[in-house]
Length: 364
Image 1 (cartoon, one colour):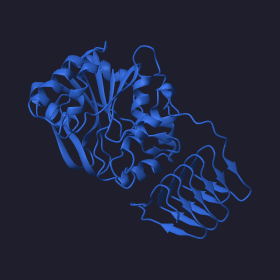
Image 2 (cartoon, helix red, strand yellow; image 1 turned 135 degrees about the vertical axis):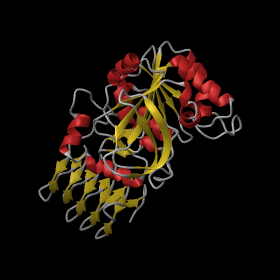
Image 3 (spheres, helix red, strand yellow; image 1 turned 180 degrees about the horizontal axis):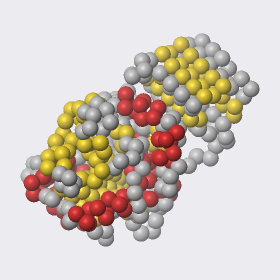
Image 4 (tube, rainbow, N blue to C red; image 1 turned 45 degrees about the vertical axis):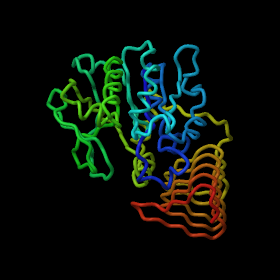
């Protein structure tokens, strides 16, 4: 069975997560971040998926609905929503209380293994290879990691391993460095171990599943690490969200994520194709259905239903659904949230490593 935990820290990306969780952030023109973990599970044959809902679940529920677009609207198993307990039931912080209050769901499932994942990573993985690795090593817990190619800020779980993959050290750190082995918040274990971990950790005062259930009890488990050598992006800040979207414009990244054997699924919306008018000039950009382009767009991502009027120049920017950029405006290094209107002859420009953000429904 698959479990996607939506209880994640959004303190470094609050500008975009005021009314939504990180996992429901729009990404790459038509997707949401949760699509990558969920699609990888479905492509690996997982038919029973539980979604650990956050305190603000509306955007997630609206996107996933019955799970039909991921073939999870089933008579048996399928997609399940696991709500967080009310504050008066448990004042304890952290995600461990959510797992504990949904223990009956895990215990009554028929699957032998539990695959636990976060929803803020961008990747495309076949988890069947992870399962074979887990069985061959006789591990209690197998965690998936990637090797960082550059330094990055933001709290991450860094590990050290032996040559055979045995985890020798695991710790949460405020930054990662080039060459660090960084956890992707994906853990595979037998259900009996998972249930015991939740019950013991919560009943002994624990708050966080990773910290209290795994890191502090690491000596009690036989933990191995499995390396994913493909593309990985962790969206935990505004800068990392912007960079991950810009990475998608690289053909090698796009082809690995979306053009391989395993598809990434999302909520389907039937809209007309893009309309490129006579004055349109588009270079190295990703344009979703329903857009109307009369101006210039370069190195940018436009979501569904965006209108770019004549004389407009958009460069190195992310324009989300239903935005309207009116005549002779200029946008460079900008992120526009949904339903933004940029009126005539406005110039907006952010820094290359930190874009300017325009909040949802704003008129400038």
